[in-house]
Length: 406
Image (tube, rainbow, N blue to C red; front, side, top):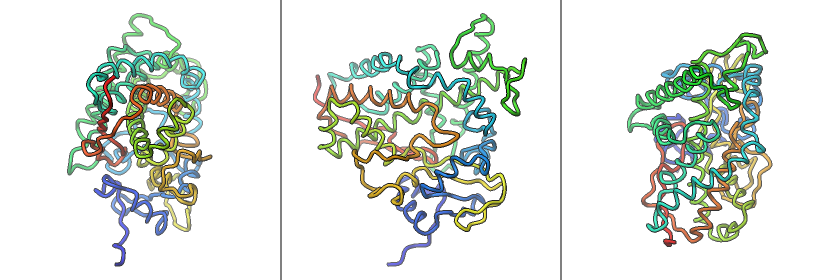
């Protein structure tokens, strides 16, 4: 039976439900695919995505990086590291990168472990909990508050606003009004923190304090005396860190536990071995890559695989497809804890590689150590699970597991 004509849109139901068959066809039949609905191009192979990530001279992030910015055009571009090009990006990232380095984040291990243990204590007698809702989202939001030096009491409020940003309504394309409101609430929260610090002369050497003290030329990122950032810009930069730090980790923790449950030999092999737990986590990021795509805009006319890209056209970098590319990953559709791929885009690549990747690895290791130590024979209730239904992030929205009470 002949295949149906190849069609791709980031808003197709098929992409929400199971994108991999379409991504396989894109890589084989149309690796540089024109999406007429939005006058944009989708790159599906690992090599093309990898190259685009490290080519800010050809593709700009400064016009937006999501469907809301470039396809639906319902989001305005706001100050964010993710939406800056070098040299502005380089200068702004350098202000805070030390606070996300492996040496610095190591000090939070005990804090992260306490969050996990406290969450497990609430369910230890029950024998069932939801990895995403009962643990993962609390850990990621709590970690954000710890890293950014926010009040721990604000964790649940921030978690709710970030959840709203990624909520989608059936039949509606992309971000909803609730999502726009979530962004607005995060902006207002960060502005209030800034005003409170200024009013009390509260000077700290944390991420917010470094942004407030920076004197950078806004156009070039070069040091310039007296060129302080506006409160609105600083609030926007902080908002980005809250959203990025809260959303993805719960999906990947749930996916890792799911894959270990599917592979009992691998699960037994990681018990008591933190390095192997991280091997499982990293392979899951490749196999179940949560970020469907990030976008760029072509700076100038260029050619990719004989396709002419016009200046101003959006380019969708299909990370989830790239992560299953057989040309880069032999037997790519098999989860393999021993893979240890030398190149991945699981934490991005190039200019905009994930700032919080060391935080995520620490969170994942601590959570897996505690969960597998407490309930090594857990069972996943896959029938009761639910998945996200969005163009931007894929993965579990809910993943209940059963275990022997302890």
